[in-house]
Length: 388
Ligand SMILES: C[S@@+](CC[C@H](N)C(=O)[O-])C[C@H]1O[C@@H](n2cnc3c(N)ncnc32)[C@H](O)[C@@H]1O
Image 1 (cartoon, rainbow, N blue to C red):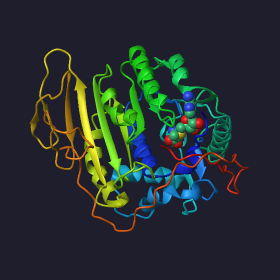
Image 2: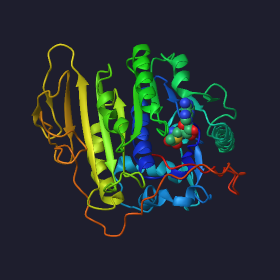
Image 3: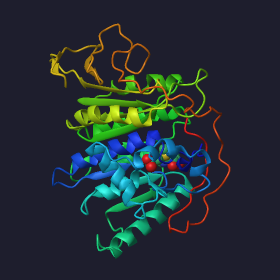
């Protein structure tokens, strides 16, 4: 099923969380001189025109990147993300939104490698066109030699399978972003299968999985299943911008990023930035965040010191988990898991903003093709259904 088009959702709150975390991961990878490979299993179109009929249909960016655009009080790490978006909009007017391949390209060094997979025929072509334009522009600015060469490889193909050919990478360093549409509930299983296989091939890779937080069972159980993967450490962050509707339908209210082998720098950064995102993007009193981390237990479990200085003992069955939040609270056996009502791990809630929640609605179905390039030389993207 290839009806999903990311253009409808470009720059929404879920993209903010995903791309902010992605940029943090690149900053961490860049700290070492050794080159690394970035693998984007579900790349999308690369760049999105926000004034196209598609992105502007529901204007999801207006409640995502929009409120961050003019802020003068951004935490430094969040500013790094907003600056990538601003770099794509040198006029100062927000017209384009960068997808994950563009964020990667901006953050990575000349010697690093990008391996981008996109199955949709139209979006894979737009992705290739966009990269050609970005490369030409960079070459004109003297930023790097023209020609994609070995640095960027774009393939129209199934990222779930293609990754097998790339692991382990030659330099033994890789950052992998896994961001499927999840319209097909099989995607949840495919992500887990792929991670199981990838961890066997390359245990030390940094793997970042975006996922929607939904009522459907596969989504509710997803993060807990990822915690059972054979990986040393994991970190799970969610951002909820509004109270979910009673029937579970309507705009996406919450999403998460689950990172396997996270950099040690990420949790403190999230602790600083997530309350800010809740404050700025939260639509009502249901807005909140969770940060949870854990490690696979091999042999004797050891306690861990939390960010608030408290010693944390392992909880759960085979692994230790340390949910953290604005209060640094710890989930105890018997308590609700993070992100559910009553959980100890939820972050501070945003003040209610009456009337700011957009009305719900059923998913929109794909009905148009991508159109020709916009006047700015970057494409307008086709329309598609809402992300579940
Ligand atoms: C959420 S979008 C990706 C957005 C992109 N990662 C970003 O952040 O800008 C998911 C993309 O996956 C593509 N897709 C769906 N199934 C795929 C598969 N098996 N392999 C590769 N791409 C796939 C869809 O066409 C869609 O463009």
